[in-house]
Length: 220
Image (cartoon, rainbow, N blue to C red; front, top):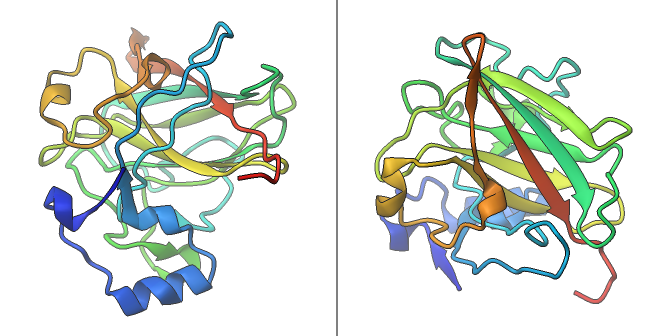
């Protein structure tokens, strides 16, 4: 069941009128909604279709494509992180070549840039976000810094996934064994595939996130 950001104690930075204007320009509606969803499992060996969850209030569409995978192009300081993102068809398990992946995070101080939703062309200061394109085997490698936890949120990464023939969706991934998880009011029923075991490799926090997209059958 959806709850508004105000219900969760987050400051609403966008008026209803501005929301409608952004949506008319094509910004996904889910940017204004927090979802509490139970994991939807199927009988295959993975977790099932990756759950949709809150986009948070700060999604920015049309961020530049980072061919090198760098989602920290302004070189904000922090502990380095590398995340391999593998995108699959949730029914067949086949990789989705060319899937569009839009990750965004806070910096090491817990700040978003910009501190508002919208479109990249409308902001002068875009940080800690970019667009990645999955390769022929459905893989993109993101390079950034470890985001800080903030307020009552555990450490997390936001994403918007889209690909021709599949339903686009927002989701988040988390750090395994995060002590702040118990106090996080958002996305409480996180399925195991969105909790990532990061390990240190030569000083870089390194992990893998497997994503399973739902085919668009035209019936939803």
